[in-house]
Length: 114
Image 1: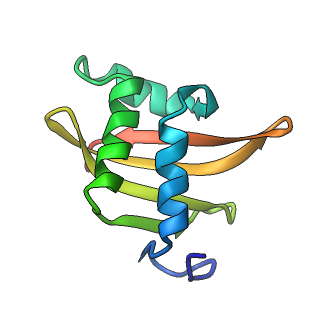
Image 2: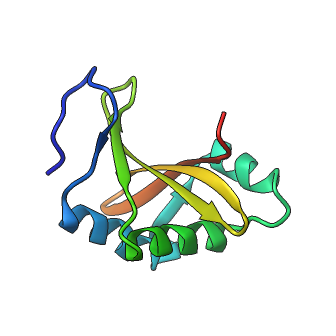
């Protein structure tokens, strides 16, 4: 499990099982939910699609690149991938959440560096 506690700065995820879980969910678009913010981020770039974001997540993990973790203001643990979606670098921020009885990966941003 990732280490850290609420209020710490961002740290690197070192749990291979969680990395594989993220990649596995990215391979199953029906188990991915998108926030309105993520939808706006995607709509702002004519070259970016939901599938493109998921493929970027899979590629990022498959190539062994860093995934960072951070606690959000509400205390939820979020995973942050600084990766390329097409030709553009994006910050993909996601977490896992239950929707009904089924766990989903919830992507709530896919924005460029701010």
